[in-house]
Image (cartoon, rainbow, N blue to C red):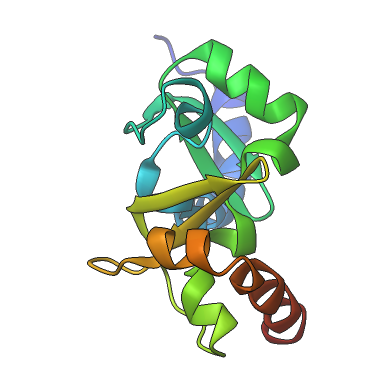
Amino acid sequence: MKLTRRTLIVLAAAAPLATPIAGALAQTKTAIGGYDAVSYFTVGKPEKGDPRFSHMWDGRTYLFTSEQHRALFAGNPDKYAPQFAGHCASGLAGGQKAEADPTNWLISDGRLYLFFAGTDGPAQMRKDPTIAARADANWKIMK
């Protein structure tokens, strides 16, 4: 590539913009540990997403296993995104805000809930449906 004076001027002008843009992209948090939020509903289990199929929503980057899953999520993120931005539903019900383990999950009333690693949160929530309501009330305060 031949570098002309004009090309050098354009590159020099663009350089200060590159660092802030790259920094902003690097600071974006990957949602639910990189798992495909749609796969919980369509495949019935969490599957790791692929960065080629990503979608930015609610300040986080969601990864998907396919373009089809990305499109489903983009069309209705409230349907597929985990409740409480991926925080543990049981923890929130008890007043704690902590990241959950994406492999410890439950779909209840069409909503995806995640729980701490190694806990029986899904079983507890099946037995006590008030967990979701208590977590929702606390999430509104702790968000």
